[in-house]
Image 1 (cartoon, helix red, strand yellow):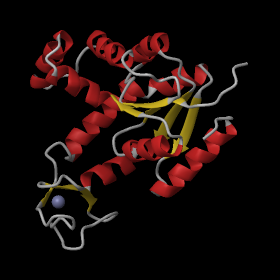
Image 2 (tube, protein in one colour):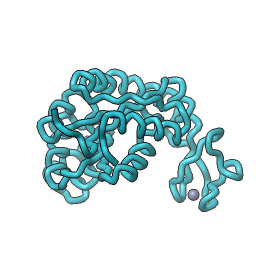
Image 3 (cartoon, rainbow, N blue to C red):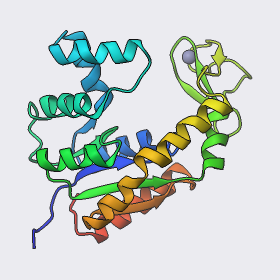
Image 4 (cartoon, rainbow, N blue to C red):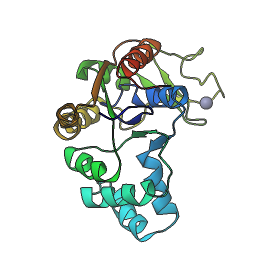
Amino acid sequence: MNKKHRIQAVIFGPQGCGKGTQSLLLSDRFDVPLIGSGEFFRKEISEKTVLGKIVKEYVEHGSLAPDEVVNAVMAHRLKQLDLSHGFILDGYPRNVEQAATLDRLLKINLAICIKISDKEALRRLEGRRQCITCKFIYHVTDSPPAKHGICSVCGGKLVRRADDNAEAIRRRLAAYHFMTEPLATYYRQHGVLLVVNGEQPISYVFEDLIKKIHKLGFSV
Ligand SMILES: [Zn+2]
């Protein structure tokens, strides 16, 4: 059996589950780089690579790039990094096909799934407000600004993002269930799945994660 030391993790969950926050906290605690797939795509586009030109077409048409393109971008960028001391990968894979490709690129020894109900995701996303100036994010009841509708950081105006309406959120959640959720079964079969209840407060989710990760034998 392989002795496990550093986490080589992927993290997934529906929008609103707190994945971004937990990824940052974990990356800090385990002292491993947090790799966001979004950044890779932005780099391909800004560096005007062949892949970047293809990706840009999809972005401009508001459609998802097909697996072949996504996998090619990830392979291209992941090969440039030294990941021998562990990592957390956020935003990839998004489906089982991509997970199988990733398995040929890197060894994944931990797959973190943050679970929340659709009802809670909807509540969180519908209540979300963002400052138009500094982009800081609030929640109308969970983390309201000091003054209604005004950013506490910079005094900017708070708005609801256009894609944070109930219909669009429901559509994204349905896509998650259909496309991404099967990753749980995939990684369970590979013996690396770790599920955490994302409906608890942020610090509880994090403690829960740490406890479970330690139990699996990973070192900080
Ligand atoms: Zn602001």
